[in-house]
Image (tube, rainbow, N blue to C red; front, side):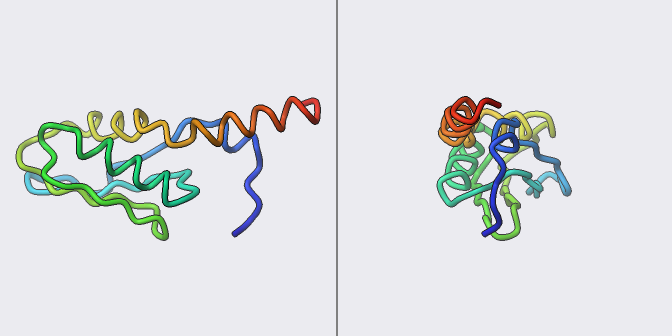
Length: 102
């Protein structure tokens, strides 16, 4: 695994919907660092009313969502942002940045 720079961890997670129809969606997610992050994203997506099931693949940094009804692209992207999967890493990065004077 390549070294992750602390400033990169301070960014909010970013996602883009690469496919969306009435039955499912695929999201490309930038900034997945670990399995815990992927699980948090999956859990956040699964909390949406129109989502039947959601899984997140760490290796490809994608989330596959099965839908039970229509959903807005912005709702999906907001669920990824709400996952706040970078929060624990962000705290560590902030402490490290302060320690070295960044």
